[in-house]
Length: 163
Image (cartoon, rainbow, N blue to C red; front, top):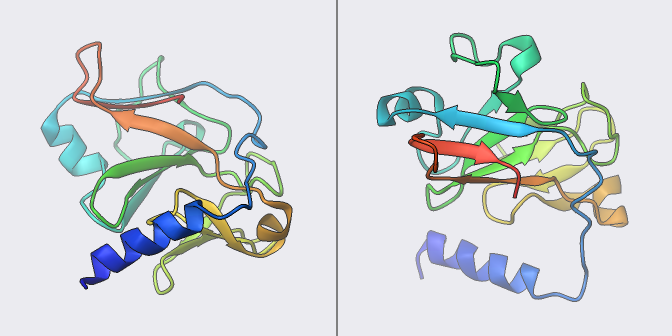
């Protein structure tokens, strides 16, 4: 069995458990992050499996991304990822335990998890939809807030918006 199929199977098993998680801890905030061409997606989107990029309009992250007046990056910023299959997935970068705009999860490139620098909670962002793996978030059942990523309907190549 390939590693990818094993991860997919483990993801399905984890999701079928009787424990539920809360994904609405982060306060509502506008989300609209357009990519108008395939070239823009190649430069600023996800590069494939297990890749990521943080978008925070107020801090102009990433540098040189062309934010417009309509661009909105949620409560704590948008964490745009490529899952284990390379499909794009997006989360609010704010830790749901801390619920503060400026306390964002950080990616550990060795463990491939997102970790809160304050509470220490870890989240599976590449194969289990931002579900908590350890820390206070796991004991409380707080997952990262997810956003829609897909083809745009107003001329965008790809867009990140509210689910």
